[in-house]
Amino acid sequence: AENKQFHSILGAVGSYSILWGIFARAEDGFGTTLPDRLDSFWELIAIDRVGFSFLVDLAIFGAFQGWLVDDDLRRRGLDPELTGTIRTVGKYVPFFGLVAYLLMRPALPSSVPYSDDKSDVVAVVEDDVATTMEE
Image (cartoon, rainbow, N blue to C red; front, side):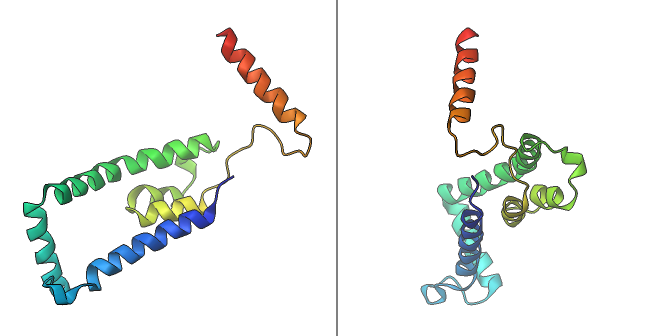
C-alpha cells in the first residue's frame, strides 16, 4: 500500500530546506538579503565540486522527472495524455510538482482482490513462480 504521509513529509523537508537556505545562518557571513545569499551561493558553487555536481544531478533528475511521471501513470493503467493537470504539474514543476503528483495520483490497480483468505494470494504467487520457471 502507498503511504501518502510519507509524501507529505518529503514535501515538508523540501520546504524546510528552502526556508533554511533563505533565512538561516545570516550571522555566519552568508548575507542577510536574498541577493547577498545568492551571491554567496554562486561563489560557493564556483569553488565546490560536490555542490556543483549536486546541481548537475538536480538538472538531470528534472529532465527525467517527466518521463518518470508518464511511466508511473501507465503502470496505474492510465493514458498519460488523458490525465490532465496532475500530469502537467508532476512533469514540469520541479520537486513540489512531483510531491503534488505523489499525493494526488490514483492508486495502483490490484492484480489480486483483497481477501482475508490468503489462499488466493498463494495460488497467484505459485502460478507466477511456475510460469517463470517454465520460461
